Amino acid sequence: MLKFVLEKEGGYVNDPNDLGKETNKGITISTYNAYRTSKGLKKQSVKYISEKEVKEIYYNNYFKAAGADKIDNPVLAAYVFDTAVNMGVSRALSFLKESNGDVDKFEDLRRKKYDEFVKARPNQKKYLQGWNNRVTDLKKYANKTFNTSSDLQSESKELYKLKIEKNVYIDDKKTSNNFTDEIKNKYKQMVQSRNRILANRKNANISHSDGHWVTINGKHILINS
Image (cartoon, rainbow, N blue to C red; front, side, top):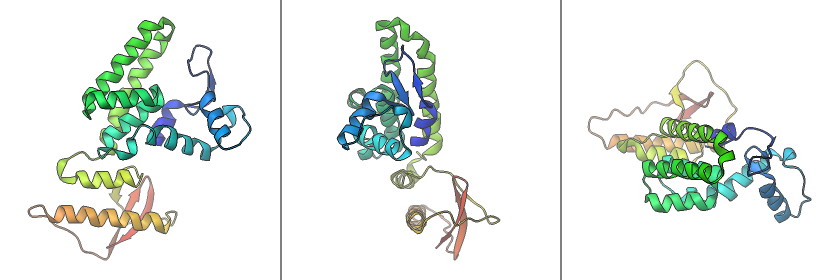
């Protein structure tokens, strides 16, 4: 999910018409200054923010602060997280409460708020199309990334909890040792969980082979059964 956010937020920008002012990777200078102060570090331009700082700020200040870490539905959690980043944690929480966890209603509330922004500040109109395009792209990304079919909902949740984007397919030609044992073990547990789900379905055919190659985000690993 962070990958999507970072792609949308882009790099360093210092637009006087942007309410966030100096920004880098979607993190404003005020947020960055507050973070460094809390760590006892000297303030500096957000242009020099590190990858570690980016991940820590996004997780604590947005993902966790908006309660996305407690939401079982990964699609809804993605909406909440991205909204917290783009519109603020308080609005994300407000939309979540008002929508009662309904993704479509949450989306509608976010789009309507953009219209209110422009009405209140006409100079923000140039951003309106981009804001709405982001929501459209988020919807496509979330629905594609997370399996929302009822019979495999648990599998989707498990992948979400592991912070692994769902992109798995069989590949018996290539391999890589770039995955840590921890990731291999966690993914193995996910596969076993998925197999238990499928075993409860009528006429399910579960393979009990010694293992198979899978690819996650272009990386190939052997999962032992």
